[in-house]
Length: 264
Image (cartoon, rainbow, N blue to C red):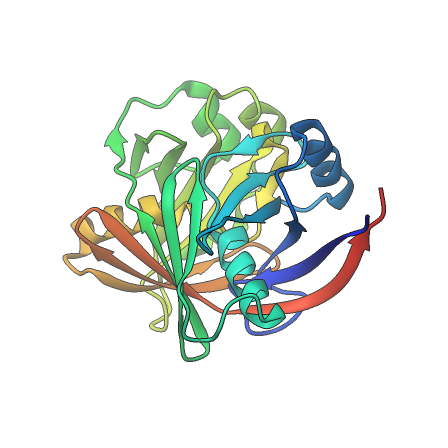
């Protein structure tokens, strides 16, 4: 039986920007090996697999082309957008996802979608030599959380111009590396890029889960709880974030670019 899927650009209001995700709508839980094959075939930074549960909630799993991940913001945003667009949820319904990171929710806020995610705390650490050499920039701060290294550099321009050594980053025992700075332009509070060659993605275009760490980090540094953030990949994307206790609200937009069926 053909399996429907959509491709959605997340954290953007325009097609062919932001971060693309494939969303696969399963009637029942699928074999993990098949899901890995589909994710490799889709070749997006994440492919999301959704199964509707008896109570109307959804089971959600995320795969890069090479590994399953514990938390993904842009594919969750894309999944919620797809469910509302297909009519699987009414506009006023809250999308509820059961995941490896617990219960995650999404709510429509006008033209934006708001995700409720767990905050990720980052602790200072002594950086391994290969980390800073691979990034090729002087660090103002280096920390590590349960997923990634977080590196602050001196300026937005440094973030924009980074050309890291992905082969060396691939040797680090983390999901990825977040590089960030305070923004120069007034429309943003901070900027970032995210590199995850060890997870099969040299550079992720827009990374919602990284902002679960960036939001509390910049909240402590800047003394505020609400931000407009820009991820400065070539595709680029904009997020609104808010720290609320041990949770982070991530707001973004999304655009459908493709619908189809998996035939095998």
